[in-house]
Image 1 (cartoon, rainbow, N blue to C red):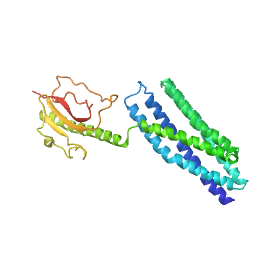
Image 2: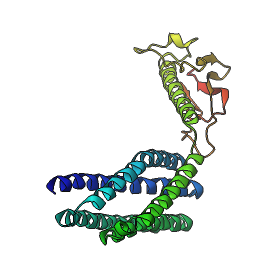
Image 3: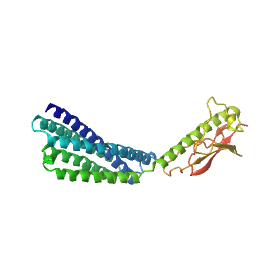
Image 4: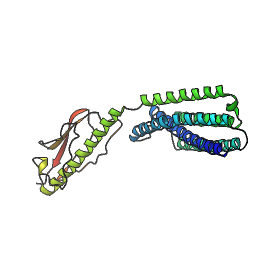
Length: 302
């Protein structure tokens, strides 16, 4: 009996932990989908990427922990059906009531968070959908364990299987919809490389600005820049960066796989025209896909 009780305690605890993680990140996934489908003009340009990141982590965690929950819970139920009554079932009830307490607390906390975001200005459609998601996801788990505490699923195994099938279908639909609303891994990697190239060009531009400030002239090549570290290089699968002098300053060129999203922008600082020895337009980094040159205007002291 003690051996069975210890085994069941570990299985039940593992089931509850995987349940909490599955529910939490399923809600993260659903909230991300709501944020993408109902964008809020009051949010910054980071909102879409933040929602996409939430969807990706929600998908990853659900793929790992939801099947784990199903397998461990199946083992728990088989173990319970094979066990004798007494202290073993008493321990089971304690763990189930603990799950009800935690689930009820999570439901209340999530609802408070959703209501707070609404009071802080979130649009009504998003508030309603997030509230419904919380009630359905947490409420379904709460209902399942409330019946489980009464031994309902032990007496109705077929209904328990149907409940599991319904849960699997809903989760798979959410995962599929999540995949449909995020970029593929290849696209995400290409975008990250594009961002890295912009950062490289910004670093090169900073070195050029220092050179102009000290020498009141532009270098003929990038190799003439005095730097203690190697200049940034383009990724291996991208063409090398280009630098060339122009009539009004210089141009930095790179090849990009994607265009800068329309909702993304870089802040700009308008420098006085009379200021000498500076780059007048240093902060415009929007680019299309393909080869593109950022042309800079430089004023030199007379």
